[in-house]
Amino acid sequence: MIKTLKKHGNSLALVIERPVLELLGADAETQFNITTDGQVLVLSPIKDVIREDAFQSALSKVNSQYPKALKKLSE
Image 1 (tube, helix red, strand yellow):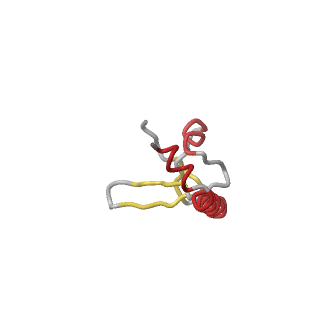
Image 2: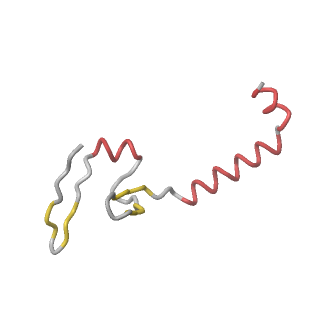
């Protein structure tokens, strides 16, 4: 996909179409981490930390409550 920067006040903006945002699970409220190596620009959506922490907590709880059952299921 080739995009052109658009003038936005004294800055330039890159418009990201809805299908790409949906693929990333992003919306107008999503924050992005922006990195560059001087030649390439990388935008990565920042995951919802609270939701991720809740998931990891639930995963740990299930793993500790049902280790034998999970082991059998993995075989």
